[in-house]
Amino acid sequence: MVAPFLLDPQIKERLGLSTSEVEIVYGTVGAIALMLGGLLGGWVISRNGLKHWLWIMVFAMHLPDAIFIWLSEAMPESLWLINAPVALEPFG
Image 1: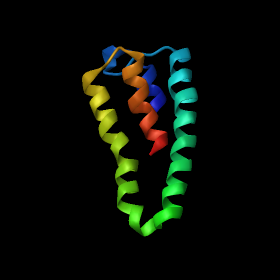
Image 2 (image 1 turned 90 degrees about the horizontal axis):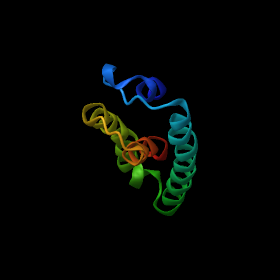
Image 3 (image 1 turned 180 degrees about the vertical axis):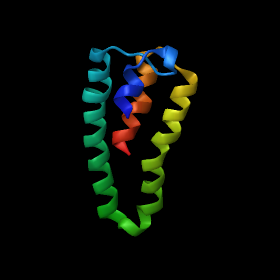
Image 4 (image 1 turned 30 degrees about the horizontal axis):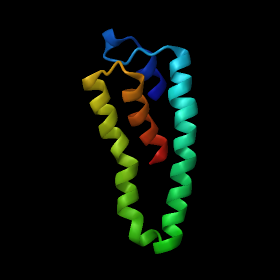
C-alpha cells in the first residue's frame, strides 16, 4: 500500500510523487535501509540474544505505521522529509 500512497495526487490526501521519485524513495533508499536494518538486527541479536531485543524490535516494526499516519496528515513536499520516514519501514 506504500506505492499508491506515494503516487496518488495530494487531492486524495496522498503525497503525489512521480514514478521516478518513488523509485528513488522506495527502491534506492528503501533497499539501503533494508540491508542496514537486517545487518544491525542480526548483530544486536547475536550479542544479547533475541529475548533481550524482542520488544524493542516489535516497536521498531510498528513505528513506521505511526510515521505513515504523520505523513498522511503533514503532507510534506520535500523529498528529504519523505525519504527519512519511508526508509524507516524497511529498516525496522
